[in-house]
Amino acid sequence: MWEESLHTVGTEPSSVSDDEYRARQSRLFSQLRPNDLLIITAPHESTRSNDVHYTYRTSSEMMYLCGWNDPESVFCAFNEDGEWKTVLFVQSKDVLKEIWEGRRPGVEGAVKDWPVDIAHPHENLSEILSDMLVKCSRVFVKLGVDSDVDSIVEKEMKTNSRAKQKLGTGPDSIVDPSSQINELRLRKSSAEIELMRHSAKIASQAHIQAMANTRPGVGEWQLEGIIEGVFKYCRSSGTAYPCIIGSGDNATVLHYNVNDDICEDGEILLIDAGCEYNGYASDITRSWPVNGKFTDAQAEIYQIVLDSQLAAIDECRVGNPYDAPHLAARRVLAEGLIKLGVISQSLDEAISTDGELNNWYMHNTGHWLGLDVHDVGVYRPNGEPRVLEEGMVLTVEPGLYFGAWRPDVDCPERYANIGIRIEDDVLVTKDGPDVLSSDCPKTIANIEAIVGSA
Ligand code: GLY
Ligand code: MN
Ligand code: MN
Image 1 (tube, rainbow, N blue to C red):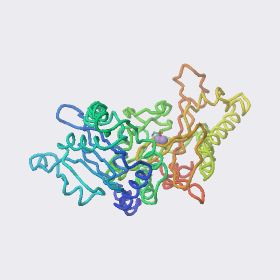
Image 2 (cartoon, rainbow, N blue to C red):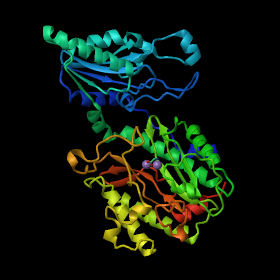
Image 3 (tube, rainbow, N blue to C red):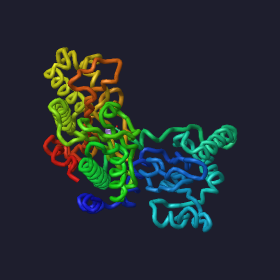
Image 4 (cartoon, protein in one colour):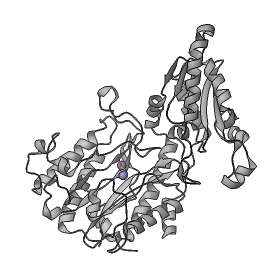
């Protein structure tokens, strides 16, 4: 099983090159002034319990600008004589710690193998960063991520408000660099696209293996084990978000992730699972019958969701507003439910802000995807919908959820506890939508051919 997955995902793409990191840095620096200081923070390690830490994952900003993924690190950039210099504070070499926790590149390794000009030991952060702060006028830093950096910046802001009066130098404003970085991250390079395609290929194989191993009586947690096993076997770092594996009424809970129920004969199973490969997330949802054959009622709902998803994907085109897929999906979902007699309103009423469609479809049709599963980037710059451009990646994930347990709606008996979502990862190209997760089957016939086949 595992080997098949590995072969199907193909060869691993190259990581982001140093040249590309340097180009990203330059694009950001071109928006700064010579007296600005840029500080990129990353979270501290966090404790799971007692002596055990969560697996470390740096901030996406750190990953985007230099790819460094160790704790106790800070990336800075300052301008000297018209040239931008990058600085990375890193954990020092320490044999005893390395014996216990793993090898460290240290200061020398950082400069040699990462796209930075200068490296310093993290223990010198306070002294060196304070010095840099004295020389700048604006500090670009996201506060609230690294408490060490926060207190150094706060201290220098206070001290320098006095020193500035005497010397005329020192920081006078703090600016969050996120909006500039987020804008860059919104458009993916070809290297990023290949990493995202690989991430989606791995996630597609994980879904296929889960489909093949689904039969009445299987535990949601067992399918979670298969999915996470494929993720790891294919050398992703693991899940990009907790797997959602819900059978029967659990499929009607949007972010259900307890995953501890038995999948029963006659139920629909909904799996929303994606991995992180070289920092990049995939995000795929498929829904299938536990016993391998859709009932007529399940097929009716499934086909409406699939038709709405295809209509939405077709709207992922250069020049369209970002919400064109959402509007298209809502329209097809409402038309379908009107035909089935679930909605008694007209189409316009059904899709209006407080129309009946909201009873059964209560979320948006997608979001940006990248280093974060809900990736960064403003959806409505200056209040207007963002226009899609080449290189943007978004998910397309319409669904219908008939939770018979809900006290707020009168669930049609025929569709009781059917929850269907179909989610793909779509790259906007000049030639139209490119579905990065296209390896993952989604027609009724293809799904029925795979479910239970292992
Ligand atoms: N996996 C979470 C989402 O689809 O947004
Ligand atoms: Mn999603
Ligand atoms: Mn998802």
